[in-house]
Image (cartoon, rainbow, N blue to C red; front, side, top):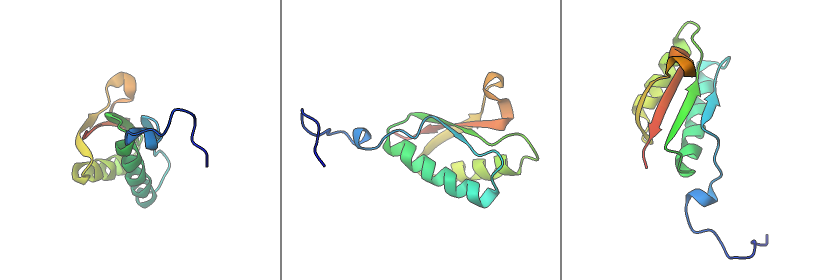
Length: 99
């Protein structure tokens, strides 16, 4: 594959396209959501995103709980909190990633 004129990009983030700042897990089963979340967090970290928004919905709260449990233990996550009311409140979790 040819590289564009100007040489190669040297930063790690330049080699890892952003997965976007938002991940919507609504409707997924907990097991599938955790796999999706882990892959997404890895891609977001490699792309250099400072934070991400994870939409899990309000529902019964099961998906919210497994997402937050996973974030609590994930090596790329520095902190997290419920979204602000305008972001979806408790149906959304905003996570700050390590840099």
